[in-house]
Length: 220
Length: 220
DNA sequence: CATAAAAGTGAGTCCTCACTCATTTTCATC
DNA sequence: GATGAAAATGAGTGAGGACTCACTTTTATG
View 1 (cartoon, rainbow over the protein chains, first blue to last red):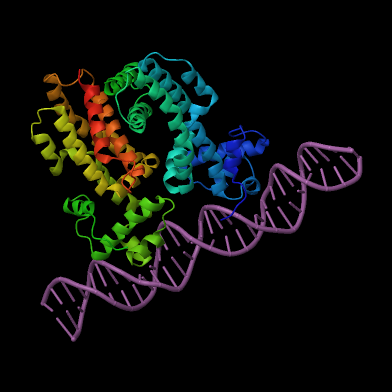
View 2 (view 1 turned 120 degrees about the vertical axis):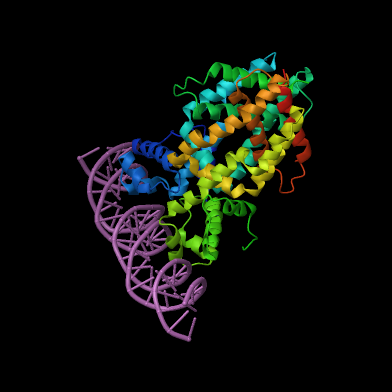
């Protein structure tokens, strides 16, 4: 089991999440793999189909990724970081640096930011959620690297609001859980029912309801 | 490996959903299939392993299920009904028939009931969630059969509480979404972090916090 | 433009998969 | 305990899986 530095780790460290020094065909392989994995799931996806969709010989895949699993990891690991630890990253700085006065404002900014992100990364999210249960290394990464970072960052915001008396007295983890559940529930319902022109789904209202729900549930 | 018959199996067999007159080996196949599917996912599960765990020849599987997929459906389809439309079933009647005076009481009864159910049916839930994205027939079942039933049943309870002025004015679907998100979030977090003797997880407290959160979020 | 390394190829290897079928075992009924 | 039907078996089959390797093409560099 002793391998060299694992590729996802390398990628984690280098800024480039997916396409830095890739050749044209390499990019096509990566993209095709995302497509096929998202569509059929990792196990049911075949390297031959990935090669075909990428317009590449099957051998080419294995020139760049030693195994099919390595290809999966190359996709999922950086995605995980971008998905769940965006709190440390550029784009999210905006949300934290501005000193929001009310939880309402903060929640709205955060939820909007995450939705925008998720809609641009649906396939990644799907692969991640799909494969997480079967790869303990990924779970471990999530638990011991990603989550603590997120937790630390968010805890500061929570403390700030708590000091202002805008937040109930609860462990930070509990608060994070409650907020995340409601937000994710909204996003899931949205992609499942809404978006695609369902007249029954009033997005602005649902979002407002979710934010109100969270605020009321968390103020003393 | 050989455990006592899991409760959901008994339930499945009692009701005439799929397991009416199963031979001993047939039951073993069914059980082993649930086990392996939950563990490795449908695609990565092999019929030979299922046969092995069931202590049965591989051919025996195909005497009872024409294809591997048919075996999956035989597991998932009834599970779906049991999982998400339990509101029409025996055990859940208790929750509805008693006229709970406060939302608090009702929520606690419901959440406790669902948690109990889910913990007895983890494998099922896992297979269902895992395979739902890849089988449109199942999605359709969910959307057009299961969900409407659940919705109709719950709407009555919601209306009752709303009339008493204990519930905020929101569409029923929204309320269901908010409650379900919080509850499911709790259960997920619980199985991910808690349960296995994690001292950081105080279950009673987390559950109480969840219920309080929902109640406060939904009262006017 | 010579050269060597890197990228790309695809026929071929070996293996496991879902599924079949001729045969044997189990079991209810007489 | 004989008989026939249902249940169970497991070696066998062809298809398709991940991965290899000897080879060709592209690219960077002097």
